Amino acid sequence: MATPHTSDAAPADAAVQEEHIRHRRPYGSVLETIGWTPMIRLARVARGIRTPLYGKADFFNPGGSVKDRVGMPMIESHERAGTLKPGGTIVEATSGNTGVGLAIAAALKGYRCIFTMPDKMSQEKVRLLKAFGAEVIITPTAVPHDHPQNYVMMAKRIVSETPGAVLAGQFENPANPAAHMATTGPEIWEQTDGRITHFVAGAGTGGTITGVARYLKSKNPNIKIIAADPMGSVLAELWRSKGEGHPTGAPYKVEGVGQDCIPLTLDMSVIDEFISVSDKDAFGMARRLTREEGIFVGGSAGMIAHAAMNVARRLDDPDACVVTFLCDTGERYLSKVFNDEWMRENQMLDVSPTTIAAVLGN
Ligand code: PMP
Image 1: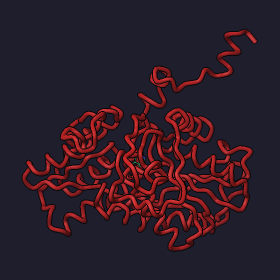
Image 2: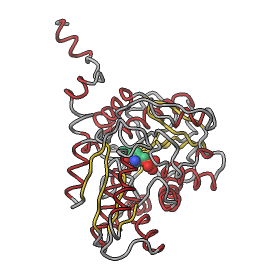
Image 3: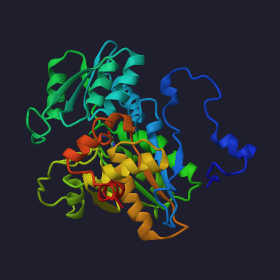
Image 4: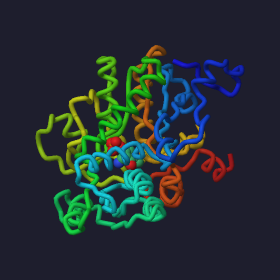
């Protein structure tokens, strides 16, 4: 693996510099800046753990999340199929980030965008989508996946009633996992010099984990793929029961990950282990990454990093290499994860030892 850059390291030699310098030439459009996100050693949050832990920083994408990678590929899949024509409309059910990825590509291609979003998603994401000129329809979160008011059902209805509209279809479009197999997987392989032993990610559509797993396992079938899942999502339970039973799930606050049914874009067979994580642990780790590493990420990145830390601690192996996925920027959650009042209202903030000491006067 390339020598990690540290603030006290000697100046990097030319070869190392060559590997890390991007942006030497102007790009034709912002779309060309998607991907080749940095990989960052998480040495401070993983203090005392011998297993090296790295974060794949996909919040570096221009739209601030991993989902920029799938916007254009999904649009092009519809153009190739002839279902999306010039002047057409792109409709999608999104927790926000896929909407941004699609809106960036649609801005360059001149398509109209209509997005449906469950009401639990942050206001920042709604405003962001509107900033790109998209129309946003908010739907109730607390309805079953086959209810007409469900955000996917609503998106499908809008498509059927809007001439020239197509559903981007992140939960079923093979272009979603394929984009990760073509870009995210090879980047991680190259950035770790093929030394990665464990990849930890979440699953919303499952596009990231499925595509990356397929690529990494094609290179080395011994690489372990670990899914972090919010407590309340049914994915972990369905994986353990091999699809048997009908778990009902429960509400949770972390956004963009977990499901109430298995999407077509998620290949459960590539996953070696599921780790369930509470909202409190997820948000606590997002805050730690921000304050201890200076890496400002959202709750799903916190959830995945929490699971990855447990994997690294359990392995206790300097020769292993654990890669966690940093999905989106914390700016999207300033009103929630990074708002002490909201955290307190939701019983997710512990009283800090310094506050206790100050109150007790010791
Ligand atoms: N984190 C966040 C914040 C997301 O928006 C998403 C996408 N819904 C994911 C993680 C999961 O990515 P994927 O859809 O590729 O499973």
